[in-house]
Length: 162
Image (cartoon, rainbow, N blue to C red; front, side, top):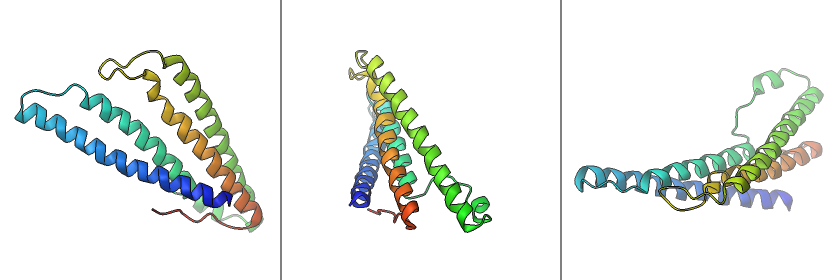
């Protein structure tokens, strides 16, 4: 049941990435149209595009951790005996989990510090720049726990797909 929840969260994050990419492309295209055809560049397109890049990247990283698409040293681990492989995989997931907790914690601190400052071109809180760290960190923690449980059971986590 926990794995199904994680798969569903991963699918939603991936769908949000796709939607974000579509909106990002539209923002950049509107910027080009405004600049070259209308001779009036909209001021909001660049900050929106930058904000979207933060969210898309953070969510994609979380999905990559769940679907084991992140960078790893599998060739080195594959050379170890099976028992040592499991220990190494467990240590890797624990290290990623600790990193994700620290990332979410630091993101939360910056989010709360910057929430009352408006972004100049958009008027939304500056803290929105740090929300992706909190969301991604939380998702990565959940996904690492899923991997650790699967490792203890001798199973593997199946990619969620779309």
